[in-house]
Length: 143
Image (tube, rainbow, N blue to C red; front, side, top):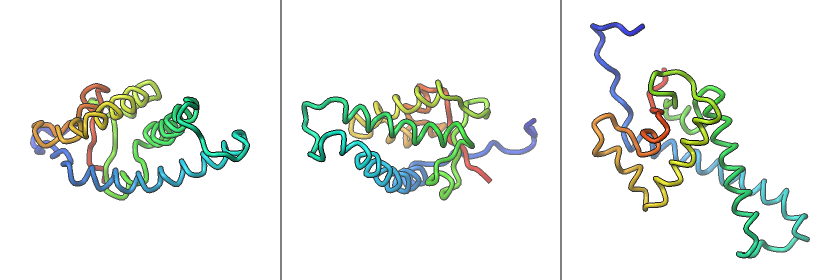
């Protein structure tokens, strides 16, 4: 229950979220390098070619599993934990795999338009990015 006398918690801003994204990107790059190393022998040790569509699909799937696992198991990636952020549903309940997939897909959309979906946090009074709104999730400060 929320206390009506307690002021509403201020949502985290863009800089805090970008800090968490930076931390997570470092870890994700390491995971993607390892994932590529696993797949490389199946390509006879040669570099992947642009016409091999399964490779980028594989990397996107690995990225989703990375974020989805953290989001559905505690609501925090390692970067989010360092910056004291947590993802949850609008009603502050943990998110499941379908909602994590929707959030991940919407985040790809947010990035695909030159990050405009993330910059939206600056203009939105609830500090929601496009993928927060599209997936019915929110980022809150964790204790």
